[in-house]
Length: 186
Image (cartoon, rainbow, N blue to C red):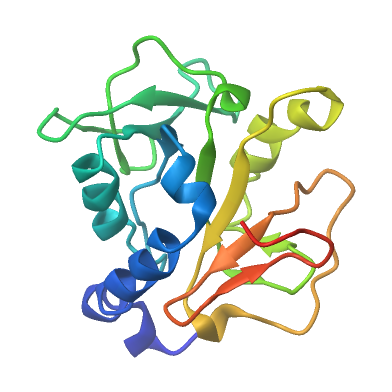
């Protein structure tokens, strides 16, 4: 990845356009409980989307690392202005309190390094999202919509997922929403 692309300014530049793409999705307009992430490294910054969701009265959640080191995520409601504390990787997260099960959320926005048209994603390699969302594969009933947020240049022709990788329903870039092959438009 080119060093200039990973700068904070370049990460923020497409974020408002990506938020505009998401705002046009019926699933976003219907959603009440939405999980976001705090951008780290070259990830697209979802803050404009969080601001929009907050203005629309949606409940916003952020992931936190499982406190016992199980390499899983909890999702905790977070309101603007509440303090964040650095986790063991130095990434800010809310204080642990009343975690929401992933299945109870309407939409989960997920960071990624690369994605393909089939909804496969390459993350940073730690597998936190895949482990945290794996139980939903076996669960019947309600599931959140899993949407990746990415820069358009992160799309690749094909990824080769591992059996434990959890596919996305689609990916939003600064230009368009890309529903995963086999999924209807969100």
